[in-house]
Image 1 (cartoon, rainbow, N blue to C red):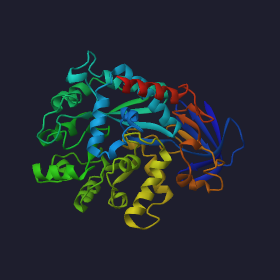
Image 2 (cartoon, rainbow, N blue to C red):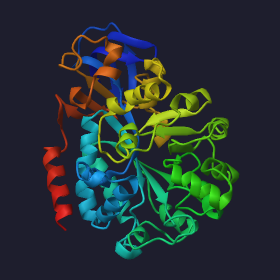
Image 3 (cartoon, rainbow, N blue to C red):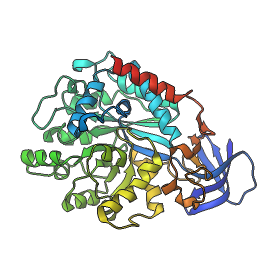
Image 4 (cartoon, rainbow, N blue to C red):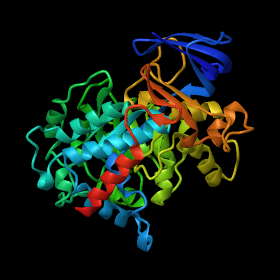
Length: 434
């Protein structure tokens, strides 16, 4: 059993002082406010671990390399495809190990990896059909983060368009063959398997329902939804429906579903997602980076849609930045302040259920023992109210991280991966030299 004494802790009922958190077998067994100091002392404010609802680990190698010639979303995509063509299971494992270590340092304790880089160049399956997914599993294990592999069905290069040379690496040929490959993945204590529809551009309408039925019914299903206006236009032209309408028509919209981005929705789309009790994962730093637009976060929450956050392209890895951007971006769109309470923002930032870990996300008895401690004495946080860390803190303020009862970050350093920055620098430079 492990014991942590928190100077301050954000409990379900609010922030308390002198909180003793007792942990056994990866779960919280007792939470006692106003307790005398004992065990490991965590100064500052301790929060539940953050959940990264949407990641493409290999996109981290694009950071700082896509700003030339004022590129568009589509030119950025071509550079991303060039990177995808260079990866194999070994290099992907090494890169992802550094990426996941960076995530834990930033306060994330679980990640939903939207994984579509399945096969060898040209689409030839590896001898082990899930070699790339297994590389991610091992990378997450070594970095000490919970991983949900959102294994992604990706069958087309666009509506009615066959996959090109790079995209053939992503495709299993059909939804049935995708489901057969995914069924070979076995879960373990830190690894769960969900599913994903890449988008209505990449999965034909007549195969959406089969993907929706694929995988375990108690695991999440994600989809890129209305990220770009062009996607909506193409879907309307092909099906006479918006992407949300098309998913709903094929029975995909429901509590398992998380719509990633959900940027360009109609009021009817919002109503459909709300009626289905679906979720929406916003990735504000990537949406800014790609010029996607600002999605209707407040309207979705008001309609009954659960909100979460993700790092997506990993252009920025900072749980606090993504969380507060829900509020700040909505202020820009609405020209009003106070769009969300800090409690609503924290709930979105810690929505582990969206990536298949419903037992995680609170500092409460029975919950998974994921703790993130933030200093209140840095140049960024000095003088703030404790609840203000959502608006003031950044990844650099994370001092300690505990995942499933195991200490992974101590005094700002990663315990399991030595010098993650050197790992990332070496692997990314090597990839671009190929």
